[in-house]
Every structure is written in structure tokens, then in C-alpha cells.
Amino acid sequence: FSTENPKVLRAGERTNFATMMKNMRRGIPNLFKSGTAHIQGKDDAVKRSIDACKDLSNITRTSLGPNGMNKMIINHLEKLFVTSDAATMMAEMEVQHPAAKLLVLASQMQEREIGDGSNYVIVLAGELLKQASSLLDLGLHPSEIIKGYVKASEAAIAALEDNVVWEIKEKEYGTREMFEKATYGAICAKQYTSVDVINPLIAEACMTVMPKNTKNFNVDNVRVAKMMGGNVRHSSVIKGVVVNRDTEGEVKIVTDAKVAIFTCAIDTATTETKGTVLIKDANQLMNYNESEEKMIENSIKAIADSGVKVIVTGGSVGDMAKHFVEKYNMMLIKILSKFELRRLCKTVKAYPQVKLGAVPPEQQGFCSKIYVKEIGLQKVTVFEHSEKNNTQLATIMLRGATKNILNDLERAVDDGVNVIKAMVKDPRFLAGGGASEIALSRHISSLAAKEKGLAQYAMKKFASSFEIIPTTLAENAGLKPLHVLTLLYSEHQKGNTNMGVDIEAEDIKTAAKDLTKSNVFDALATKKMAIKLATDAALTVLRVDQIIMAKPAGGPKFGQRKGHWDDDD
Image (cartoon, rainbow, N blue to C red):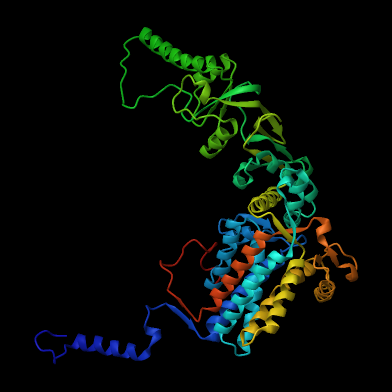
């Protein structure tokens, strides 16, 4: 507006004022910047969000259980993943829909906190939203559904503790049978055909690194080394660390060795400031070389005199230094990863040295046996402790024909070790194979019958959502889900609450089995966290009534299309 006369508008200002008034009349479309997407209403915002979550749930659902199918995923870097592990799928699939991303985040939180049950979270959350969709179609308000779901989830988590079938006593800790029994169900879900080979390996590795105070058990202390070639039955456990490198010298085996670990280079020391040496004749050059040789030899000799048999370095190794290490008959290993160097320090109980020279006895490490082993086409250096020496790390050396097989085996090992981590915190287990889900479904249905008000409908739907787990297990095993579900309900009605889906059943009449006798258990901590996260994710999606998406930043992305730009015209 003009400052001279407020009543007089200039031509340009009149146009801006008219546009502003026009936009105010048009409402939300012009409230945001151009390109912003705005979705609202029950049919658009809520239903679309639920459909996206259902689609994501359907992708992972077929991978649930021992007979779950693999997914072939090629990520944006064109790397191939063939897996039935939901955590890997969520990490590699670039999910764009904002509501489906909430389910991905819930699944990732389960993986981070517990390490197992990420597929369970997505499948249950997807089913909860599918059941909520039918209630919305009947005219129920989202707030009533949320109220019923909250009540039902609290009742379900409380009821889980009443369904505990096995609690580990303190005197049972440390036995191989106990570890194998606890992890059997989790390993079956990933590697059903190899469970008899992998399970004892995980049990042995966990027993090796289990501290006196079991609550301090650390998952990172069980390492995995993947070696191409052979098959799963050639896998083994090493009480120590496996380094994927050969030694630098000719010494290939050392026993009862003192170990010195250096973070600096094993070479001539460089000065902090730049200096120039002026050499006038050949004698001076020879003398300079000799003094350099003597300096390195004195450093290596000092290390050898302190009783060290093995030198490990995180830096480079000079040729002259190699010569003197060989002269004093020591083993030399170069490790490029600083994380691997730290793990090795932990294994041999050594302190890393920052300067080349003699190592005090209290800062040296010790290892029973260090040797080079050729596995397939690869040479590795093994730091192994004997039975009488305690070690803080154990390595499961996995063998397999392809990289995909090895990666899948590693994920199975990871799940098994995480079950042990959950077990030391809460040593209670439920019956597996969908038995606990049927028990929860029956319990919540009975509570819903006593509930007054509209929340009872939501509670009934919450109860029937649990049926998706035994249904999926039956479907993936090639059984008729409706018949299996009916059989499970009738068995639970008779009081056989440990009855779950028997995936090996040839006849529908024998599809229900007491799986606790087959050592199929689910950790209580895993199931509690999964139900809580799945319910929270579903409630978050139900609370959304509008979606506002800003236009993505940046211009068009080049380099996406291959070939000539006229090819598709």
C-alpha cells in the first residue's frame, strides 16, 4: 500500500491484493506452496494409509515361519539380496508411503531392541489395521477403535505372563542343552533344514563367552567369519578371533605366544617437522642407511627381548622391518580395521602401543595358539585359546557354497544369539507355533464379551487379529488354514493350551501338536515387545486423518534412464 495516501492503491498493489483475496476464498489448495499434496477424509487419508500397510504386511507375511518363502530384493546399488529375514527386507526396500514407513520403523525398533520378531510386528500391525478398516466401514469412529485396541493390548501383554510354559532356573544356566532348547524355535524360523548343525554351534559360542554375571552377556562377543566353499556341516566354532588375512612373514604357527599390538607403522620413524639431509658423497649415504637400519633393528630387537613372539600392527609394514622380524623369528600380522584391532586386544588381553619399541610385560597379550589356516581358496589367521584359558570372544566359522547362503546363515546366527540376550534378561518362554496367539485370542474374546460400549467390537477384532500368525504358518506349510484354526481352537477348549501348528503334518487331523515337546519356544520378552510395537504402529496410523506432503526438494534426477532418450518415444 502507498504510504502517501492509504486510500489510493497503485496498479501492481491492486493486482497482488486481488490475488491474495482470491486465494483466501479458495481455501486449503492455496494454503501451501505449489506442488504440495493434501489428502483428507476417511476414504482418502485413513483408507489409503491402511491399504499401504496391508500391502507391506502381505509382502513379509509369506516369509513368516520355517516354511517362509524367500524374497529377491535388488537395492538402489543393484546389489542382490535373497532372504526371508524381514529386518533385511525393511533395510533394503525403500518404502515411500508415510504410513507404511511407520510399520518399517516399528520393525526396525524390534530388531534393535530384541534382535528377533521383526516380521511378527509387521504382520500383526497389518492385520490390526485390516480389522480396523472393517470397523470403520461399519461407521465406528477411530477414537472408539483406539480405545478398544489399547484395552485389548494391555490385557494381552498381562495375559502373556500367565501362558509361560518354561522358566529357566539359575542352576540350568551354562548347560549346552539349555542353550540349544532356548534357540531352537528362532533358528527353525530362519534355517529349518540346517538347524541341527547351526544350533550346537551357537550354544557352544554363547557358552564360551558367557560371563559369570549372565546379565552382562554381550551379543558382539560372538563373531561370525564367512568362508566360501564346502557346506554348512563344515562350520565350526573357534575360541578366539579369525582374521581374514595371511601373515606378512614366513612364520605361520606359534604356540603359547606373547602378543604385542601396535597402532603405529612398523617402519622407520618419521619426524613431526620436515627436515632436509644434505649428503655430499657415497660414504655419507652408506652411513645414513646403516644408521637407519640400526634404528629399526634396535626397535625390533627390543620387542623380541621383551619376550614377544607375535607382532600385530594396524599400520603399514616396511620391507626392512619385515627382514628384522624374520631374523628374530617372530610372526607379523597386519590388520587394517581398527575395530578388528580392538576386538583382538580384547581377545588376547593386550594394550595397544602407539610407539614402536619394547613392550612392558603387563601390556603384552597372550594366546595359546596362533596359526594360518587355508579354508577353500582363502588364507586366514586364527587366534585360538585352549580350554583352560578363558576368552571373551568366540567366532563361528560358517561355510557355504554362495554368498547368499552365507549371509542367510549369518542372520540365523544373529537371531539365535539375540534370543540368548533376551533370555538372560527374562528367562521365561511361551509355547511356539501359534499356541500362545490362540490362547491370547480366546482370552481377549472373553474379555470383550463382558465389555460394555462400542469398544467391545474393537476388542473382538483385536482378538481375531492374533489368528493371522497360526493362519500364516499353516498357509506357508501348505495346510488348509481354516481347518487348522478350527482344530487349534477345539484343542485349546479341551485345555491343551500348548497346542500349535505342526508344519510337518501330512494329515489335517494331526496338524495340531504340543510343540513344547519338540523344543519350539518363543521368548516372552520378544513377544511382549512385538505386541506393544505392532499396536502402537497401528494406533498411530488410525489417528491420522490428513496427509500433507511437500513437493520433494531438488530438480529432476538425471542418470536414471538407460539408453537413448528417444528410445521410448
